[in-house]
Image (tube, rainbow, N blue to C red; front, top):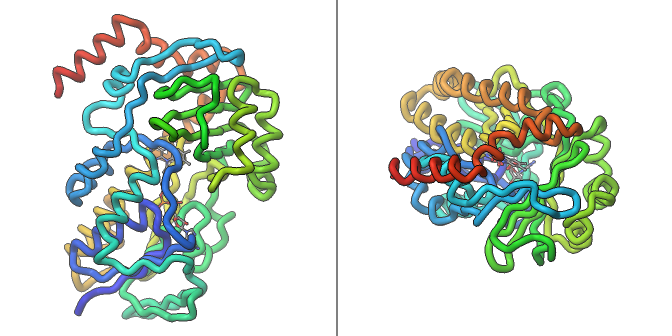
Length: 386
Ligand SMILES: Cc1cc2nc3c(=O)[nH]c(=O)nc-3n(C[C@H](O)[C@H](O)[C@H](O)COP(=O)(O)OP(=O)(O)OC[C@H]3O[C@@H](n4cnc5c(N)ncnc54)[C@H](O)[C@@H]3O)c2cc1C
């Protein structure tokens, strides 16, 4: 009999899991709280085990088409003058060969295109209750239906409802790293930012980056230190971002002026999820819902795709035994997720340093790469490898 899975969440983790389960002959159903798909978001580095998995799952060529290389990355002073700049080809060389720089929304687009004709996706729907027995799991949904499945996958992100319903309150698992982040798409590039560049200003514990994504497409990225992340999350970006960035200068006023008209604003705490076991019976967490390594580690989308791929492989290997498959999958993936979480905690102090020495230290590798002879050497190495 065909095995069924309900996947809560249609982000990278949920869509990749749907694709992989479909590939092994399961029948996945995705429920996504948002009323429709949205695109864009922030640029992520997609590499490592997720890159390998995307290749195995057959979506790498479509992802590679969405790769973006900035013409250059410019690090500016508060008055807008460049401190230093790294040429795009050097950025590409630093990224390495098996890595992409891609919008989060573009990864979702590619995964969605791969499953939309084969997998049922219910938008505007969420999970409301879960019960399970030895043979399956009953999932009550907000559309009034109750779905019986062999497996329920909570891929519903940092503030997962599946985790709350089955594992316990979020506070039991959330480790705040004392920073907030915000991202939204811009209608117009601020006048002080050059087309084709990613330009960044960091001062006193806050960072603002403006990412030009080609004609008519740009994104603003905010990241700053805070001692009260959950309170600021409750206040919301419309209040908090102007308060924190009002006096920053450079592109901040022009970017903030676009905030009230932004189509959707991503605004959240930078927090990790520390969950002792990723499954309870036939309910498993995957992606940020399970481990959220954070943008400090820069590996969340890659782990989400690899997690999906390897879950499919484990389920395929144990066709009659979901529980053994889940145990094997976690044993295989957990060391990688914990390594990235440890990295995220280690580098958090360097993300938006409040003192000039730490800022200098943080920028040292980039400054080195921007230095003419080093830059040429890195580019030559990439050409040789290619
Ligand atoms: C600013 C920033 C920069 C980053 N940079 C990188 C990087 O360079 N490299 C990298 O690999 N990773 C990076 N990441 C991390 C990466 O984006 C995430 O780890 C990845 O997107 C997680 O995907 P996910 O599907 O697990 O969660 P999410 O993207 O949060 O998706 C969850 C989905 O579930 C839906 N949902 C939520 N609740 C419910 C519910 N109750 N019912 C139904 N649906 C629900 C949501 O609408 C959403 O569609 C970055 C993250 C941020 C914030």
